Length: 81
Image (cartoon, rainbow, N blue to C red):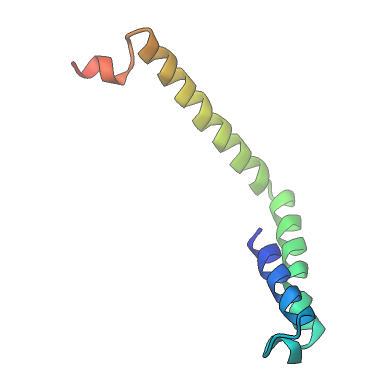
């Protein structure tokens, strides 16, 4: 995501002729897009993206479970009393 944001900013600066970006090569300006593609390729092939999604799902499950236990009077807050 950061590579895309940087690439878009550099692209807009190049097209708006803002110094010093206007003097840079197009290869340098478009490089963050290539890095984004390389990152996504690596992340997908190594399962990094899927791991992060699964971690977020586990966190949401734990939060829902704790909320349900608290609603039943058996949550962490109830145990501390």
